[in-house]
Length: 296
Length: 223
Image (tube, rainbow over all chains, first blue to last red; front, side, top):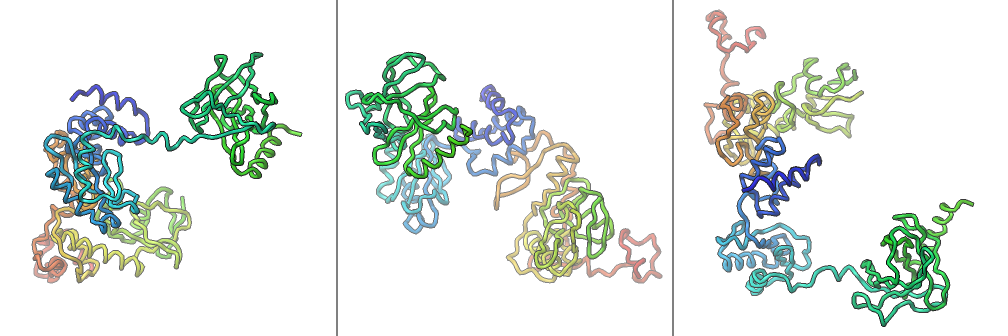
């Protein structure tokens, strides 16, 4: 047990109110449990008594003073899962791994635990393994879950894709689509616009994935410079009345396919963009905003 | 200074004092178990409950932790308070009948039954020893461990502590483990023996004052 990294963790949380739980969490993240020596070092470093730290460590169910396995299996035993035969699944895990709930295998690979609710009762019985949820688990699935856990979850798709979605925009002046099928960014057609800043004109292509902030530009961009955007078809300047909530720069308005509009900050480096789907509400808001900013 | 009304009596007390201190200052007795003047108030045993506020929106609070407020109306022995206190004593008796302190409280408050499943715990988790150890002895050797049913008092990792000086203050102050009620029979939760003992000073003529071993008892003066 090297005290250096614990000292590092303690100094990292120095001055925080109620830092003890954060310190213990960091230590547990490293060892999967709280070793006795670590608690003694924490007591020394924080200047608190060992009983206080031991009291906190034993009070919270999230902390364990016994060594825990690399893979953490939680079987839900809440009411909804219980009536759908969660006890049978616990029995199956017990039989497969040779563990009772709360125990860890000899090779420190698996820890079996029962929890009282995982919050997704409609999908019960639920098994949670290392942050991965398995729903509608049957006794026959237990073997597969263990095999999958041992081989790793690498092939599982990440959750990144779910939160990003492609948008399609058009010029509000000429109603011409701004999507560039030839130049694709992140596998989707890019939003292609003409732009000018600091006296130079060029093109800019942005990822159409809402929330991704990938973009390509003809000229290297200069941070914090206001940019003027133009439609590449009708060459009209794209303008908007709203101001960016993050930096106060004006935002340009693009037509949003399917109704509504997309607002985008005109400062290089600002990633703020907003989709407004309810036209009326949105326009009223904008008028009020504009009035506040430009008196008279 | 704030003015509070305790059992209908207007009292002016220093701001920041607790209801318990104020009531004791003017002479209204409030029974306590986990309270000790030497250590900080904790509010664990709830025996010191009092009723505050106006009916029907009055409420029960633990007087040892409740600071006085301007115009507070306090009743230290209303029917509701007495009933709550008896229930608390009954629950304490259910968990720890061998404590003389609790048996004395039961006798003093007329608790004549114990309707819960009888247990014989060694500890009522009042926290007196923990506070004694940390506040008076400055040792921080023992503390609360675990949660809920598994809550217990002891040293970290159940090892003999290297900061404990074996001063014995925890045992001295403990209402449960040190003062054993020797007359307790497992089948009867309530002993009442001490309370039923005839004070030796009743026949005062037969004894001299020197022989009275119930020194703090004021039975002679009351008679």
